[in-house]
Image (cartoon, rainbow, N blue to C red; front, side, top):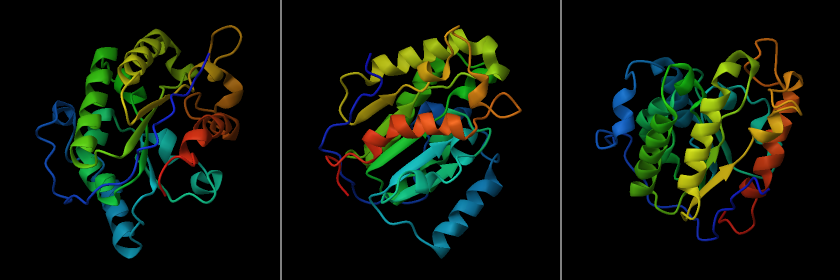
Length: 234
């Protein structure tokens, strides 16, 4: 089984966008708490002012699995990696914050991990898909040549009761992505399961939710062919 949908070679970066771009036209943003994560976003913006990221890079955005990735830039040597994870975020939060911490960087590629917290908060797999569609529309309305990779929702012991919903959400997103230019899907769900179909504890830290370095090594191997693809514009 192939676990990676490769992005087409046309992916480049597109013109800039103002930080104040409205997300009102994108339904997923209406579910976001506009005050939540204000401190984290303020830190990102401060960092941007002090050391503006170069355009045409790879933005990793999403929840704590992105925020807690140790040595993310070092895992993809030679790449212009921008790490913008904020723990506890749902897809709606990523949509709402994208005009501040994604779009201004004019990335050639966006690696998105979100949806895990949405399901834990009682959202449905269909809502995950709708929120991802909003994210894609928001990005491609402004940056039509920027690639977007959805990293599948990962399994974990602390959320083992949500495994079926995770599978459903992943399948909905994967089918939506199939055949659409500029979108890619990376399956980390399957290799993070054991032979018994349960989450592998050896990939998780003590909280049974977040990953250790072994878990991240799986993500790195799965993402490397896309992030470093020579077909993509630098």
